[in-house]
Image 1 (cartoon, one colour):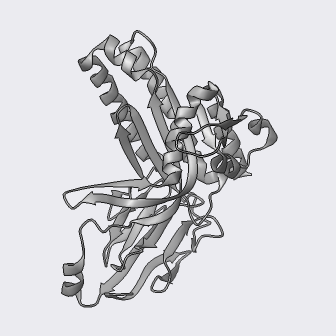
Image 2: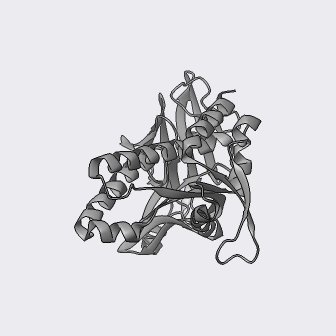
Image 3: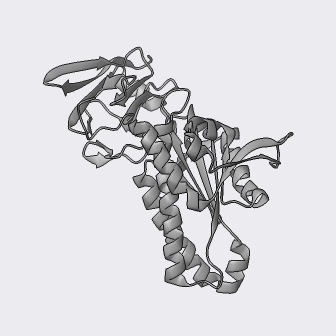
Length: 328
């Protein structure tokens, strides 16, 4: 690995000092799940798939710590982790009751640092699930409310939605016009039902947030939204110039999430999922019956795509089914 010698983390588990060598592996998963690299099965504060230490795919050889949407969070040097953070030699991070210490000594430090680009930060391909939320009839609302009033409403929506999406472990949020995009990263090449819980928790709270804004501002027509959800491999990382970079995701999976949100208007239901996300949930029959299956035309795609729609009233029931499946 260019520029670095031995890389490892130290932690005490069950009263025993443990060392996990990272020199020859690309990632270290941490959680209660038996398939994690570091299994913390006896710590109730730890989620099944809690956090990930991952090496940058570029030649820099840097490692990044990410929280995987855990219920109780991860801290890095005492600060909550809300997006991937680069680990330095001697850094500590806490997961549940366990404190990890990261060791990552450089060789030829000055030469390596001189070669690094400040925006060269973990731009890699990952399996993710994307949520796109778009306010309905925004242009009409803007005309009816006036620029000052609609700006106040949207600022309130973006601020509060950003807080709740971070709280539920999304890696990044983007605000494009009247749309919000957020994404969650999966461990490994596929996803599991429990990894979608945070997204559906966010969707339940986003609906509640929009209801609150309707009560607070009393617009001439109620605020409403459509949501597109899709899973797939995308490029994620800090993208942009050295002075203006942005942690985001790009690729076909992201584009399809936006198209699926637009398809909510075709099918007349508020939430539309892509086939990959629907299959990932592996729902029991009772919860699966809440969805309607469609074949939808998506702009930019050569052929119709399968999609599955849901009403906002049924989102909470799907969330409970996901939780029950995980606990079972």
